[in-house]
Structure formats: C-alpha cells, structure tokens
Length: 157
Image 1 (cartoon, rainbow, N blue to C red):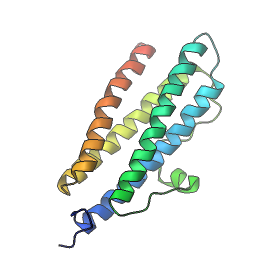
Image 2: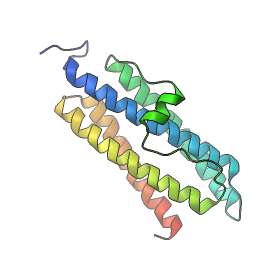
Image 3: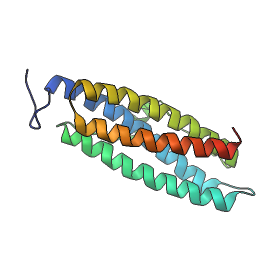
Image 4: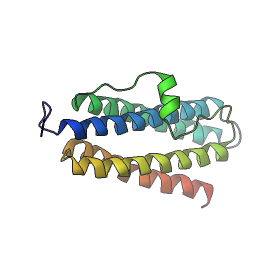
C-alpha cells in the first residue's frame, strides 16, 4: 500500500479528493444561490430573511474554504472554476428568486443534497481511516440537520 505524506492510502485519498471536489462544487453553487436570495428578497419577511440569508452565506463561505483546504491537506487540488462547479454540482443554479418561501424551500432542498453527499463522504473517509474528513463531515451534518429543522419550521412543515 502506497501512502501519502499524512499516512493515508493514496488511492483512497484520490477518491476522497474527487468526492470532496463534488461537495465543493455543491457548496459554491449553493453559496451563490443564497447570495442571490439575500440580494433579491422582497416582501413582508424581507428584514428577517435578509439577515438569515447573510448568516447562511457567511457560514457557507467558511465551509467552502474548509473543504478546499481539506482537499489540499489530502495532497490534491481543489476545483476553482465555476464551469467545473456547474458540471459537478447536484445543487441546481437558481436565478431571480425574490419570494421568501421559494428561497427557503430551495435552501432546504440544497441542504438535503449536501447532507446526503456528506454522509457518503463520511463513509468513504471512515473506510480510508481519514479522521480529519470524518470529523469535518460529522460536524457539518449535525449543524445542517438542525438548520434544516429550523427552515422547515419557518415553512410550517
């Protein structure tokens, strides 16, 4: 077995890096969607949602950086082109959303995709004995599950 400079199997980290790049793409598209919601929100809940969306995109930007740095830590290169993000992302690009409930539904849907991807990565990272990625994914999942509950409560679901 050939290992990288942090002692992990090279073949397994190659697969992890590929999957982390897909996660990175999802985060980048989700981030831009939420920026758009923040900029374009209208209606009676403007003030409340404008602030919530800013909190969310600020958190997403932090996670984007953490995922990219994890890819680098594994000895690989993070994707860094929007054309690549569009190609790899399961989170669809959303344009011209100004309705609060539509934006929140899109956010819940995007989180569902992210959480699913992160659960897959959690399993792969565990199989590779990559505790750094396991810890990152575990933290993200627990935070985001609570966030989904809160957004769903806002929708009355």
